[in-house]
Amino acid sequence: MPMNLPILLTWARILLIPVFVALFYVPDDVLTMHHKNLLAAAVFLLGAITDWLDGWLARSLNQTSAFGAFLDPVADKLLVAAALIVLVKLGRADEVVAVIIIGREIAISALREWMARIGESRSVAVSFLGKVKTICQMIAILMLLHHDPLFGVIDMRFPGTMLIYIAAVLTLWSMAYYLKMAASSIRGHSR
Image 1 (cartoon, rainbow, N blue to C red):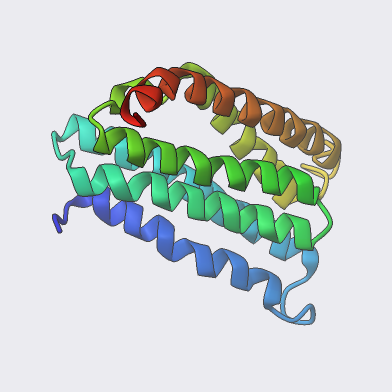
Image 2: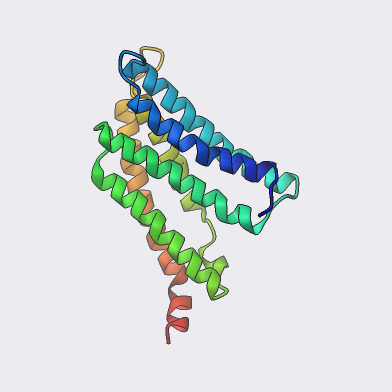
């Protein structure tokens, strides 16, 4: 297993997940819900920044590796799944939205693994639509975690809720896109 700065950042993102979840189990007399919201949003934002940073560093330092390419999306999916589960538990996100987003991530990961095995991974490479979905999803989760009005004025709940529904629609759309892109290769190898 190679060890370099991008992979260390990816591992750090994975290690942030239990910290993020544990914040909501701290007793209210130790941390108010407002402070839990702020800290959870900060930890999630840090995780999102490391997601961008580890990829940028891997490319710019020429430290890309097969292990890093495997671990990075796993870390992303774990962070998003943990955040969605917490948001559902807190009543800030709908269960259906969480099932759509988490289910799609599992399905597309399996599809990408299958396509890589048959030498067709390029047909399910990350698309622009997938990137837009991810941006909407990350911003929505961040807003819903923060929950309280930003600067005491800007409502985070309504736009966060709308954005998570948009992310769910984009999730289904991007899944359909990836399945369509892979369909001919799958038909050719299932005979």
